[in-house]
Image 1 (cartoon, one colour):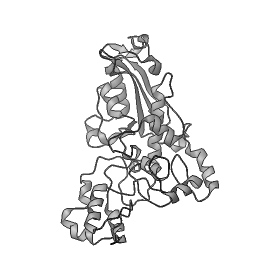
Image 2: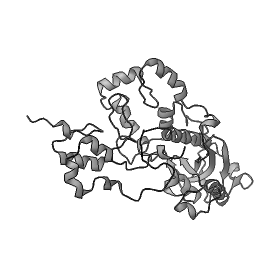
Image 3: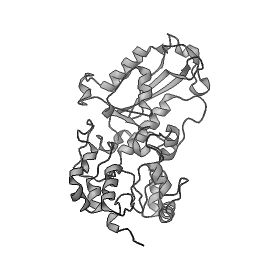
Image 4: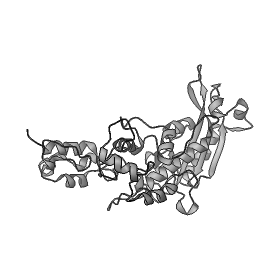
Length: 341
């Protein structure tokens, strides 16, 4: 039986191919890069943190035995890093669990987090209607917090989860949607003209959240995609089974930060803001050791990621080693580690 040549083994995910042109096509479609989560034992690239957890023995998928045993002894279950000795792991754990606010010296003021709570509208109360909004800075200080008077009648206040009562949404206690939108926009724009931030950031702030499009739609506003950092759609934080399926904020907070939110009772949007901001800062703080990449919050690159492996270079690509192909490969998303810090 013919064995697969080691030359045709992907340098990122270690998948093997019978022909070199198949490996080139795999690299063209997989978008492997140094920005992907990697196993600290064998170095394998994974598409998401969920996939890496499966590889290390956390999920239902059969793990790689060698990696799982090493990780069990010397691995952090939150950040998934592997340490040379158990003593280093013990020293790391206290700092890794982000259950308290970071110190002032660790942060910049370039990002804010948005969180909202909804009540029910429509005949059956299933239509989400924005009723409370909260905006915090990177120091987890509240920049704006208010009840918001809905534009349509409320048929279900969802009091068990939101703690919102009819009196909270009356004129004396609640802002109008227009007032809330104006306050949020002023904080996000930070003095910049709205039309300018479509092409250049200037002083505008990065907006962090979970399900940002849903929250922004409820306020009747938009924000440039290159300035949004959504933990529900960031590929490394999404589910293993599909890039179109999001993990809940509750799951991400427990698995990545080590504490729980949304455990029943009245939920304040501040808790969601804090969790989303801490997730963003954890992803932003990753260092991939890359040279030559442009840092800072800029718009999406003009060139398509598919241009890394153009069809007209096919023969040249087939003569390259797997390691050379990996160095050429580009991710299909902008890694948060490239943001200003």
